[in-house]
Image (cartoon, rainbow, N blue to C red; front, side):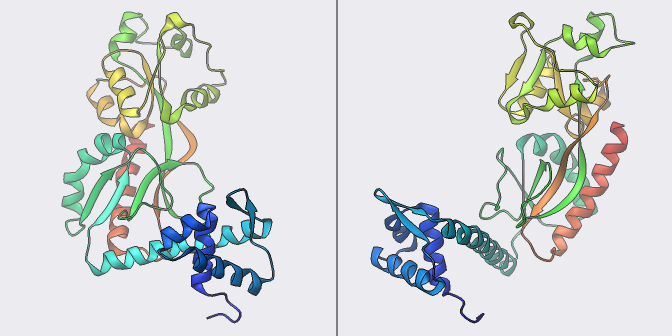
Amino acid sequence: MTPNMPSLNALRAFDEVARQLSISRAAEVLHVTHGAVSRQVRQLEEQLGVQLLRKAGRSVALTPQGEQLRAVTSVAFEQLGQGCEQLRRQAQNAPLVLSCSGSFLARWFIPRLDRLRQQCPELDLHLTASEEAHWPLRPGIDAELRFAAPPWPATAQVVELAPELIGPVLRPDLLADLSVADNPSVELLNRLPLLHTRSREQAWPIWFAAQGLVAPERSPAQRDQQFEHLSYMLEAALVGLGVAIAPAYLVEEDLRTGRLLAPWGFIETSARLGLWLPPGELSQGVKQLVGWLQGELQGDREGAR
């Protein structure tokens, strides 16, 4: 142990108190007594020569020095937890568990699963859907695919895979009804309902800004609609309810079969699709997955441009 390094138990007690802002609740989580937690924190303060906690009514609050230490301990214990979980899973020869959004899973990953199994037959991959991004990763999750703009958290190992590409998509008959199928202008969007998703509320403004335009003010009569999830918005576009702003990767099959059109093309945003992993050397399974993802996404980008 590093000379003058406080005990791990004391640091763990402080970290839990800082998380709960309560000595009693921290004691419950750690399965020790209130007095044991108090003693550990007091000994830590004496060893460091600073006050870490102060009373705040019936709870406690962190002093500036406590905030400083908490920033360190939270990262350290998260990394310890992730590292131990990885070792347990490797010892059990567990499958590689990959999390991504439900829309990405249904529209991009599942149609390619057969190709993945043919190209990487030894890769034991388990897919799970989650609409919320998590860092640190949830217990039992080895990696997560997500779109996010850098900078990444210092504790995350992010393998950047592809830029995010977004653009308006709509059913062909919407253009035909307006007699502009051969030459659709951006101004045409002012005459059509726009479809939004709560998971990416800034997508339309980002796209309009890239065209040198301001997103139009919409009247209630134009019946713009917002959907909870991206997959719902894309289904609305497929039944002709309006124009959706969509990631290129998720509408590839719809564009290929002609169910949707992307007459204005796609733009690259600041976000990147990345594979989020705990720090450390990549396992053989993760390396196989990364190589396969890079190849598939490269083909998608070439098709979208």
